[in-house]
Image: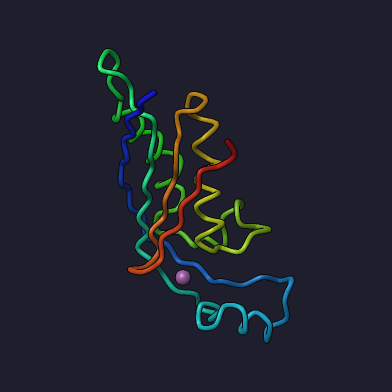
Length: 134
Ligand code: NI
């Protein structure tokens, strides 16, 4: 059966530091390099949220998706330090973990099966994509 998907783009700016207390300072530096700098650094994150579109009879309500993503993801992370967010209390703030955290925020709030994919662009050359458990 054919399926149309809709992707919406959102943005937030946040600081982070790649660091884990499970490693020594030297091991952290070896693992994360300059991203382990104690003062952290920032990114202009782009979040791409892909959902299964509605049919011609019931078109996709992008306003409600925008409200949901803005209220639960963008306002939570924008101009914050990701390392201070409870979602990362036991997780390093890598793009891999961030994209999964965003999926885990949104997926329970959408009808079952609606969320298809979450993408996070962290830098010009880094893109992370997560499709959750299927
Ligand atoms: Ni970074």
